[in-house]
Image (tube, rainbow, N blue to C red; front, side, top):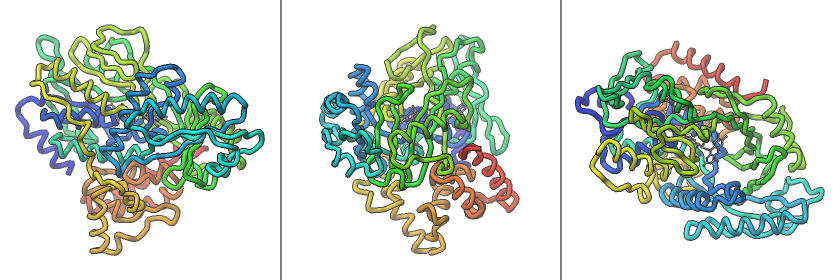
Length: 519
Ligand SMILES: Cc1cc2nc3c(=O)[nH]c(=O)nc-3n(C[C@H](O)[C@H](O)[C@H](O)COP(=O)(O)OP(=O)(O)OC[C@H]3O[C@@H](n4cnc5c(N)ncnc54)[C@H](O)[C@@H]3O)c2cc1C
């Protein structure tokens, strides 16, 4: 698949309408939007699709209760609407989840009860379920492992949950179906300008062959998340930075710490943040933190003090507090927080995401959140159309199904995320029962998913398969390490690789896996 994309990109002699740099939720969202409008679009990702923050989120499709507390009603309404659109267009990938805010002080019940009813009201026709106050007994039914000492009750509300990397891969497939060329392992290393100083092309590297890729385009969209300033500096080395990166981590434990189907939401931790404990893919996910960092990296690693903070906060709410030795995996993601007050040539600002146009015409879009990716893309493509003088074409993504669209997919078990593709995976297993064999006793994955990932989901490396097509690295990194040789052996013939590739990939993955467990 990658070879075909590369050939298509190289065969095109006329300029593209839009080049998108960055294959996370923001960039892929832009590619889906622009391709669905009918523009000629190419997207270049330096690593795997979703390798950045977009596979490292809290996995919530949410309006953001936190913003409501700050009185930012329009922002919450926008996100609640987008939450509803995501579920409508990808019912196989977004599910409802009950959250309980445990109440220990007398004022918390009425306070959060009213706030969460407002949250629910703001969703209007996109509502996910009614919030209500709970007695202590009801709270314990929802959360059997919550600390009972001083517990007065709780407030239940509903939001959405998803598997971020799986959603992203389905978006990549959607973009391709709409006509976009999507190339991974192709870092953009240069931006060319015309005589008027307007950015008119990019230079990228095909990381698999080392060859240079040169493209001409009418407009370039920089959607590189925490890396946006690096790309802006390719055109203007002295440009003031627009992003201040901040890291957030999650710890993953087994299901016994949160055995039901309900998440815990703690509205105020000791550092004033929201913290979640969430049932996710048969495990318990707890996070997050907010730690300013110097510079972004592709494989950020949790800091000791972040791990301690999550363990200490969990111990305040869980009867059996999780310990370091219980950590099955941990991961860090980087928020591209937009700096205030450094605006030079701001084309447009919204309070959540930012679209900025530099002097060269390079458009940068960043900020926002996963849940608002579609709206961000619409806004960004509107800017690109105007700036590049492209023919006006309406955005169609509010009603565009995401690849694999299938209502009521949950009966498909661990294949639910494939939606309508699950039938094809099943046929492969029927034809070759070896593909139905589980890959590890601790995780639900089967061999067919590996083959599928290479054939249909652009996976190139062991990390791509184990971390983002399957979520093994994120759920249980020791199990992922044990699966690695088998998974690499399944991938090699699909990719036309030999035994030395298998050995190299296993070693590379061993190095990477170190960052997913505490020292
Ligand atoms: C800890 C944490 C938890 C979060 N939880 C939630 C949540 O529960 N719900 C929610 O809605 N939002 C959440 N968010 C926000 C959400 O995850 C982000 O807003 C979103 O993923 C950002 O996507 P992005 O595409 O802008 O960035 P990224 O996903 O980082 O993508 C940028 C991409 O650009 C690529 N790139 C960089 N440089 C180049 C180059 N030179 N050439 C080519 N490619 C390049 C990178 O490799 C990367 O893949 C969370 C964020 C964090 C940090």
